[in-house]
Image (cartoon, rainbow, N blue to C red; front, side):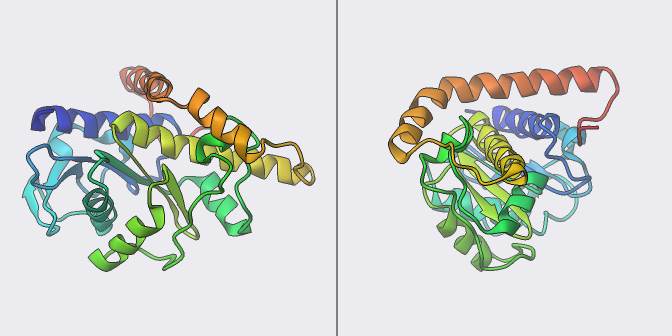
Length: 242
């Protein structure tokens, strides 16, 4: 991968998240590891996910300094810097304020494999970062978040949002999208009563391997990229569903 390709992925991943309804005005971001080891490519503050363009990107060093681009970095750039520092196999990380994830985290109950999406975690619940419900604005908090995420595809940040990571931009974005969808499904089931029909751990692990290999994550991601391109071509906004 070249720096130009990493920049393109940072734009593309941002648009895909917006198309999935994970925009929150100008908050939330996707970051792609710089292939030359200089830091991360991430949108500059003040832009919505659907508004990201190549000239609205920053290259932020692991010391949280802007090497390329305008302005200061996001206050929460430490999420991505520390997650990607701690997980060298990951090439992209995502942080959004996905509404279903926030609502579900407030219940403080296990995430069950009620659906294909829920099976992403193999029937082992989802990690939660409980150190703070405020901004992850220091390297120390970023390190603790990276530790909470561990090797999981994504984690809930109660009172705040979610974080996700992946070996590709497609995987990181889809991990965020699938976590929010799994939370939304369980919220709906819980509203109707006690959820009793779900996969056991063995079936959930099998479904994770069957439903979410890299090829399927890529296919879902490509759909979101196409949806974002169509919306942008029509002059619309994809930050929130109607």
